[in-house]
Length: 161
Ligand SMILES: Cc1cc2nc3c(=O)[nH]c(=O)nc-3n(C[C@H](O)[C@H](O)[C@H](O)COP(=O)(O)O)c2cc1C
Image (cartoon, rainbow, N blue to C red; front, side):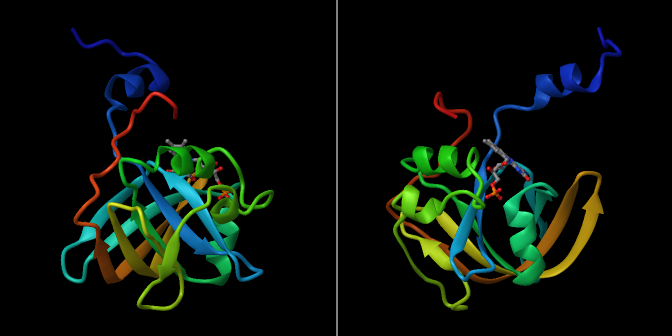
């Protein structure tokens, strides 16, 4: 029977399982940041586009004001630790690439690094944005795509996140 409950109770029913991703952005000092994201989606076939929803309190939100690029990273099955770090610490306080010993190489756009152990990674240029309550949705056009033939994708939940 349908029950008229509050939002958290109703959302809890359908929330999980979910995919999680990370977005790489450029910090104002030129280093790179990572944020764990559950709120993202593909939004266009041609050109391919992804939208990511970033909270206004996140350092990544500040980073996206200056440099209008993000790499959307679909983590590999063994990237649980960096996902947890990137979703619990702010790039204001730590360098997540250093702290997480993240291995990467320059993308084709030469704007942002591609994570070596990701399942897939998409280099995106922000083409528009829309405020959505306490988050902003950044819509990025995919410029270059990478996929790792040897690595499976991480699925959420796993016990440590
Ligand atoms: C599983 C998971 C999913 C998350 N999804 C989002 C999201 O979609 N949007 C968002 O703004 N923050 C999300 N967060 C929170 C950010 O990842 C977290 O606040 C992070 O520390 C922000 O880092 P920053 O300040 O360096 O940008 C999520 C965290 C976790 C653990």
